[in-house]
Image 1 (spheres, rainbow, N blue to C red):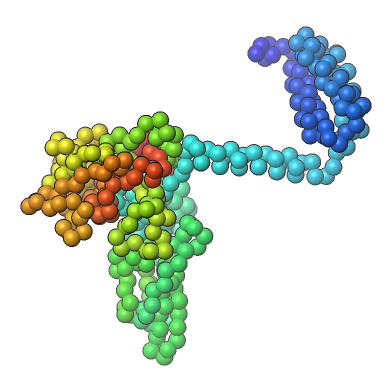
Image 2 (tube, rainbow, N blue to C red; image 1 turned 90 degrees about the horizontal axis):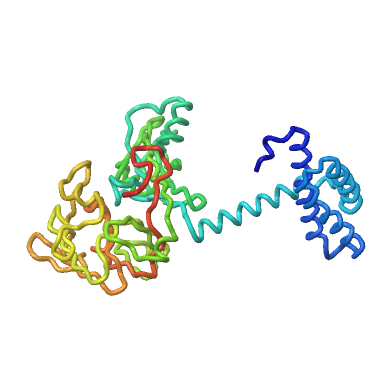
Length: 382
């Protein structure tokens, strides 16, 4: 603790001695099945001399002991060209194990995929642009800070869009391939790095559209989805509270209109607005829980007042609703061992109104912190 006040040479000898002692102990443990009993006893004897010398800060004695350790170490553990690589691999493996443990039991990164939680959390959103992308330095800055990326796709020979094929590169990047065919029957495929639904809904590109040679097919800015940390510990000790943003798996939940091949494999992020046994009532733009205005988050008041771009709570088609429709209201009951999930962007959220409650066993964790990009949403999730 007070080594800082010791002479420089003393500090250096103490640090070197502690390092050699640790390495000696580690090598003895690693090689105890291959070394002879005599060699193990020699190592142990040297190890046992360190504590007393370190306590007394005996510089002369430590220097002598360190030389003995180096001689024995070079004899029993001769250096090889792979020692550095081995240590680096060990560090990497330990770091990877710790990262996996943290992700599995404590904190998990999660990317917001859609706009169902806007304006609290933003999903991946392509925005049509009429301007040329800026220089690479501005692009790099905008991406690092604001999570914005610029894209401009220009056709070579032109033609008519005859087919739109969706695909995925690794597990992170969605794309849509546009097949263009010109009057002579020549084909051209152009790739747009967003989902097919967004190509149609956001970029307004449809089958049958024609593009002249050398003209832009798409010119857009992609806003990356907010990256959040999911707290996976809290719900092991208590249930979700009304008003909390939580993440859950869709296993066992039938999502209307979802791909049957992906059903149950997705993770959703919504706001927990009600608990098991509660009665939920939507009377636009208000949301009632047990005949009282919903409480538990400042987002509710903004929804009710339709402030700060919060749209307020809305009704859905009666035929799609899991509740009952009475005039300008829809009512729902939260089943046992379930939670009611709704998006803050109520008019554009596929949530419990369509498929019912979220079973307790589907919970993953609590939306905790937006760590990127560095926008006004950066920080604690409320």
